[in-house]
Image 1 (cartoon, rainbow, N blue to C red):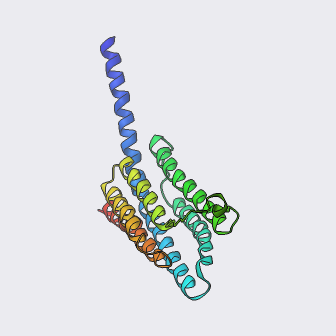
Image 2: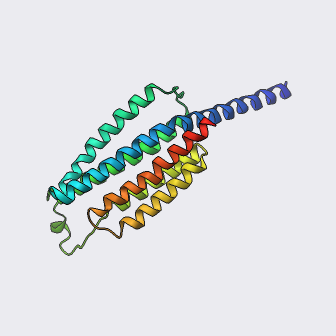
Image 3: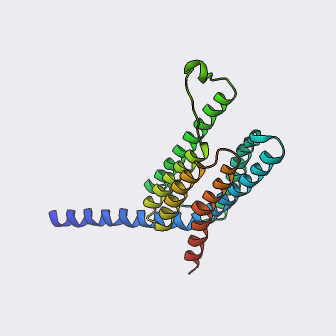
Length: 208
């Protein structure tokens, strides 16, 4: 009886392992076009905002990032309609939590900076002697790299891990060198390295 229970427990663990591996493979396979799509959105809007910033009104055009998020989610929804659905489990939930955390932090950070820039949060009144400089592109790049690398570990995909690491650290240190519109070009390169390149590689790997 004890031997039968051991075999049942071993079989249960094997089923769980096979389910996790199947989810990892399915999520990786489905992620190729999503990565490429989001990467193209970031590149296109980075270049568009950089052009408008340089020629037609300055940093106020950063408001177009909100349009980019809407466009990105719409495109992702359309792509998901043509993909085989992945059952909700520990792997998919964990990845969702990672990127939801990234999104929440970036939205709150952007909101706080907007309130400071608009004078709604009078930081100079709170800290009169403060001399502050925040490079939002560096912070976004680093947080993106962390989220992407963690995702790579979850789905056990070395390409996503390496590209996330390079994009995150590279974008962080490069953006520190540029205080204004040039940051948008750094963001475009981060998107190419962190999303478009791994998306293309995953796509061709799945075709083999």
